[in-house]
Every structure is written in C-alpha cells, then in structure tokens.
Image 1 (cartoon, rainbow, N blue to C red):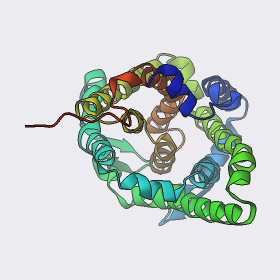
Image 2: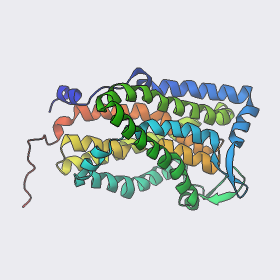
Image 3: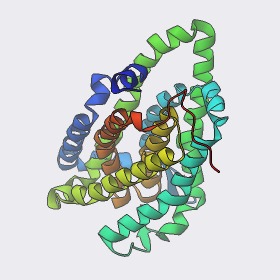
Image 4: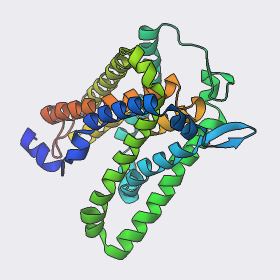
Length: 312
C-alpha cells in the first residue's frame, strides 16, 4: 500500500480548530496566568466549589462540568458495534494490552526516575492531608473519578448516539451532528486549562523551565512506546490497518482522566495537575508526527492479500 492510498483511506482530516490545538493551549496558558495575577480570589473560589465527603473535597464541581463536556462528545462517537467487531481480532487487542498494562507503566517510572531521581513517596492533598502516591493511585478516589468522569459521559454518549441515529439516521449523525459536537470537547478542555494555569501561573513565571522538564520525559515516553509497539506489530506480521492503530493507542495517554484524577486528589494548584496539562500541550503535535510516520512506513506491513510466512 502506498502513501497516497493510505491517505485516501484515513478519512477526513482534522479541522482547523483541532489542527491548531497546541496554539489554543498556549493561549489558554497565557489567559490562565493573566487571570491568576488579576483575579486570584475568583480562582480560589472556583477551586473551593466541590462535593465534600467527611469534610474532604472529593469532586471539584467546575472540573466535573468541564470534564463531562470534554468526554461526552468523545463517547458519543463510539460505535459499539465496531468495538465488538474489533474485539474478534485478538492479536492487536492483546498486543495493545500487553504494552499499555505490562510495559508502559515501568518505562514511565524508569524515565521519570532518570529525569527526577527517586520519586517522592508522598504528596499533600488539597485538604492538607499527606498521602503515599502509590496508595492514593489505587484508592477509591480513583474509582470515583472514573465513575464521574468516564462512566457518566459514557452512558450519556451511548444514549445520545442511539437516540439520534434511531431518529435521524446514521448519515445525518455523522455528517451533521458529530461535526457540530466536536468543538464542544476541545472548548471544555481549553476552559479546564485556563483554570489549571490560573493557579500555576506564578510558579511558571518564576520557573519557566518547569514545563520543559515535564515535557521532555513525556515526549520520550510517547516515542518509545510507539516504536516498541510498531516494531512488535511488524515482527508479528500485522496488517498495516492493525499495526498503526495498535501503536497509536499504545503511545497515547488519557490525559482527560489524568487531569480529572489529579485535580480531584491534589487540587487545581498541585504539581500533579500541572504535569497532566503539559501532557495535553505536547500530545497533539507529537501524535500528528507519529501519524506521519505511520503513513510513510505503511509499506512495511502485510497488506490485505499478503500471507505471513509459515513457522516451521
């Protein structure tokens, strides 16, 4: 399969809004820093709006609203029929699971240790409580964040898709409804970033290299996992249609859930929240680079009518 054929098969490209997402993120960083300097009281008030359990804030209401509208359009686009059909092709799914669950956490820890030394054993929650990072990761708070920020929009998205397709048809859903809904997700993300950088503005101004030192390991991690998954897919004689998605999924990170969990655990002003924002900042241009790599190397992989050699 040539480069032109691959481009013809990939479907419609990104719109201008999504293509220049990094620019909008930078503008939101500036807006957040400016807001933090001009109206710090308003930002603190927004951070105080939360659902409390036992006197401790567990769900930030502004973040919950923003994250819902960030995740909801994504969930609406999920075709569960396609998901079930993809599940029947076990090899790509298994490779993705092995890489993302069995390899990626350890490479992330290794790269973080390389850049930061031994990771701190604890961090202070936004209510002042000190917790161990590993214990907080596997705590019920993470389960609550998944329920609020993933399960709720997933159910709402499924119901919306089923209703709209049933009443208006698949063609109207894809041609009219989805394009209208897509900017909602990105807009909610950008509003979340404004909130986050409202709190971290002073830190960034005083330490401008902070973002760079967070971005470099994330950049290396993304390329490492992509290369590993892509290389394994070639060794296993995957078709290009399976190899490219496996590598892209393995390299990508669910920064929306990461932002939600970090802000709920440690607050909008925490270093953990800042790190997840930097991930959003660099992920779009890096993933576009990886897409270009896939398009230029599609000839490395087995085509539809190509048969893998028999193993003696």
